View 1 (cartoon, helix red, strand yellow):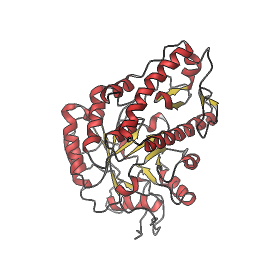
View 2 (cartoon, rainbow, N blue to C red):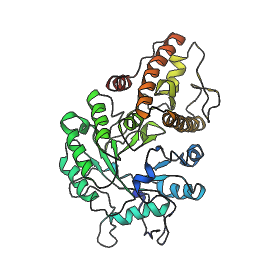
View 3 (cartoon, rainbow, N blue to C red):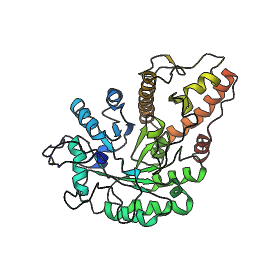
Length: 381
């Protein structure tokens, strides 16, 4: 049955006028809609990214203040695509009494959580995502407040966003997070907040793996290739960002931190290495005196992997490349008869070999990133 909606606000992605009817051709539960998908998290590039996305195994999560409007455009052009809105609510800090960002509550036109979720569905979203605020390190009361608020939602087309400080993945906290998530009546989407990659220590990666190994139907949200590691442990789905800022959330009142912020060279996904690499580093170091590797993805079609400049055109091409390669990796994982977990371990082993080959070819030592080494260690690669 379709659902009538009311006006929404930008932070929830609700962008359609009252009376709009949500699509009725999608599974009516979040579990059915998201099972075993690897979604691409995009922003203003979403309209250009959509043709690369498989309607059968993937989908788009649209981020940003205009997400609802973009999802509406995408729905008109791609009737069968799985589409979700990434709320911007994680830009504010949760309290036990207010785990959701419901917009201004002035007593005149107060919106309920159902109004906001209906707004996302009315914009064309296949599943509604709760406008959860960011839960600061150690704030167990707000974590429990999210549990209470989420369990007050009586519908099945909902994904509950858990935007947490990465300290929650530490051994002394992750058991509590798991216990809370398991008591939520809806699937949960876990994302971690940091100015850089939040998964750079062994205890955080171990906690992340444990979470997805114990919480059923959970989604690895706004992540990098750790999403595949999560699915190897049992995650129902993953949402992988096209660019660094979409592979985590920023802690409120803090901006992301780049090594060379004045430069706009893109980070491109190199599947054999299981890592993203910045193209200026490839040009200046890796391939400074050797032939660059080529990429045969659906976007590059034989292009040198380091030939992306900081121009808007090249940055877009790099983001599209990232989406295409994520699709290819997911297809390979699904095609592996031994399962995603065995595929993941095999790819980790191959990544070590590929780093050695790259170093030998270029004469430049290209070490395996610390976080990838940790994944290799904890997953027995």
